[in-house]
Image (cartoon, rainbow, N blue to C red; front, side, top):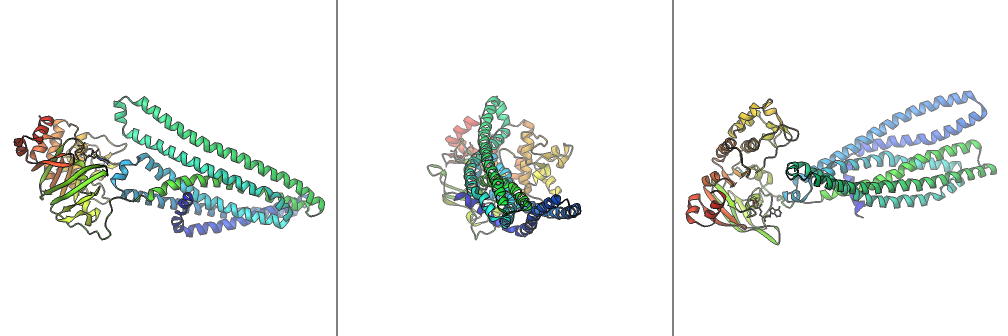
Length: 574
Ligand SMILES: Nc1ncnc2c1ncn2[C@@H]1O[C@H](COP(=O)(O)OP(=O)(O)OP(=O)(O)O)[C@@H](O)[C@H]1O
């Protein structure tokens, strides 16, 4: 039931390509007509050979050459048109799934396996494209060929045809049974290969850790285990196909034996001439290819169903943070932020923030401190609506953030994360991240404010230097300054800084600090603070403990109070 509906969901994509498919199918129809002509030609030539009529043979040979030539043109048109449609369908599907994934919330990606997702977007969709191609390009022509050739066979001698196809229902049943088995095995195999891909992504992105823990052998074993599971699942599918071909091949052979036996009998009865029997056998020979193609197409169709399921199950996942249908643009803000009676939990049984109230004035710098797991990141994740609170509201400049578009909200919030991700591209593209049309002058100006300009210009290709995968290596401090330049170019009123915990060398640290101070000016800033200098300079320090603000004030005020902050300060910074 479920599997049928997953292919069914391809229909809108197929419909979009109906013109190309219709054109391809008309070529297919034309191509099919050539089959009985060829069988007829074979019979005629056999007759002329028997008569020794060389002139007629030469004439027929010339005629056959023309037929083959036209057939070639039709075949090319059919193949190329169908490939065009199938590839376009795969492209549309891929683009839609990717766009859909982009709309899903952080919570989804925190549990999803990256390798699995990339496998679905590449291999699974390719397989669906191949199935679509095969259905129209092989399956439909094969069925047509079967019908036309069968019609011709019935026309020649219906009794013989009926007797020859006595085994057909058994064959169809067997193919169907094998198809179902293959689907089950393919699902298992697709999941296995996805696991393998997820494992690879995980390990290669964490290769430093693997080496640091000397865990190479452990990882090799884990990989070998997963690869072995994959091999077993694939082997099972291949064995099933092998058995199926043997069984179907045996039945086919039985049909041929029956045919010769019955053919001889019909000729002896005077119901069939020798030439007709040759045409008949030629027609039967023309059935062998489509039958074996149909069998393998059916198998691929079933295997493709597993891929189709895996794609359409992604498309039904709904984002948990949704924009209201009547959401408005958030106008340029001054940066006043208010959290009002916020309760938040990732899972219902484990509250993270409880009755959180906070009012931040425009331009204020708020440092969040507290033990790991206190809820600092969570509190700030609510502001750009990476998550929505279960209870309470958040206002920016008095506007409830639930009522504005996500794009206009996020455009006014800049984030400098703890770890800077560099995407494949040039340094300029990385600074202007998210913009396709940017002015290099603006990028340079942002880099200057972020103290990045100098090191960038020292690279041989300057702003055109390739970074990210297979790009130039940048130090931790340089990466952070790129992240700061990104935020500068974005020019948000509200800034969220997650300070890096890893220590930088003192020169780099000073450059990062200087850059940060420049961009913090005149903006509302929230910092998850790990450095004493940052904490001391904040207008207000909030101490978080188990999802609640337990202390609030300036560094001096909190030290003087001698409570949690004073203890925290003593532990962390002294
Ligand atoms: N995506 C998530 N799903 C489920 N629980 C989460 C998730 N993110 C954080 N938590 C839990 O929520 C609590 C608060 O986490 P949070 O990351 O906000 O703390 P934090 O103060 O920022 O900690 P750290 O300084 O270590 O980053 C922790 O108990 C954490 O385990």
